[in-house]
Every structure is written in structure tokens, then in C-alpha cells.
Image (tube, rainbow, N blue to C red; front, side):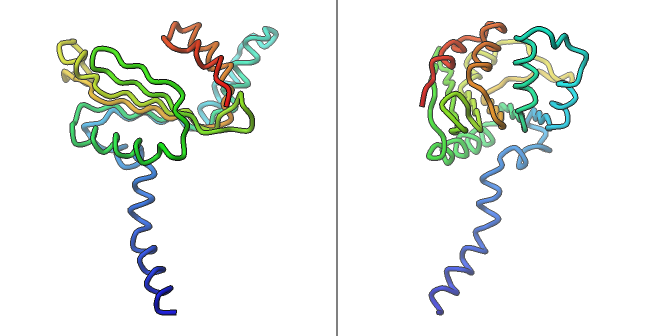
Length: 187
């Protein structure tokens, strides 16, 4: 009995650490060294209700996709300590995600992960992690809020009932490199 009490006590003590590690976005939402974006489900619902030509089948598919998104969050930072923390958070989540694609170019590493959804064409989470951006942004003249900024790390999380075929079409229309590979993704 004493053994179980000690285990329960340790689990209770470690609970705040695990919940903090699970939500890197909440941890850095108010940090001035981070650009933070969070789009809530209500915003997606509003976007879906906008006056859009719903007679077009392609538009109907995009509206359907927008309605299926429950969360869109982004963290961008040039702070090395935060970048390390974000990297550690992504690494801690790898076991529950499937690596979809890796792009390495000129010191920049971009990795796409997914969490399995209801079938092979759907995912419940799409996570994009980009690291090493300072190699290409340090000499760029990027200003935010009147300050010159460099970017080292970006993490994007999209959750919901996400249709990979629709994401593929959207990335191709937006000319996002690598989007065509999503269309061929089968679990």
C-alpha cells in the first residue's frame, strides 16, 4: 500500500510538468521573444459562413475543410533558449506522431508530422517544425512592431479532421513547395 501511495504522490507532483510540456503554445503565448498566432474554432466557423460562391464544388470542399479545423497555432522565435525548448517539445511528441516529410536546404530543416485520423486520407493533427532559419533570415530586413527580427524556429500545429487531399490542393494552389507529396500520403 505504501508503494502505491508513493507512486501516486510522485505522479501528482509531476502532473504540472507534463501538462506544461504538452502545450508549448500556452507556455510562450505571452513571451515577448515569440510571435504567437492562435486561431480558434469560432474564427474558422466565421470564415466558413462568409459570402462565398458555394455552387463551385472546389469552394465547397475548402469550406468543408475549414469547418473541420479545430485549432491553428504558430510560434516563431529567434531566442535560442526558446528554440531549444520548442525542439525538445517536438522531440518529446515524435512517438505519438508519424513523420511525413523532411526538407533540408542550406542549414534549414523542415519536418512535417501527422497524427493518424479516421482513415488514411485524414489526420487529427498536422505539425510542421522548421529550425535553422537564422541561416537565411539574419541578413534579411524583416521588421515586426518596429524592430528588426530574425527567425530561428517556427512550429505550426493544425488540429481537427484534416483531409490531406484538400491540404495538398491548397498548398499547390498557394505554390508551397512539397505540397504535392501530401496527396500521395497513405498510412
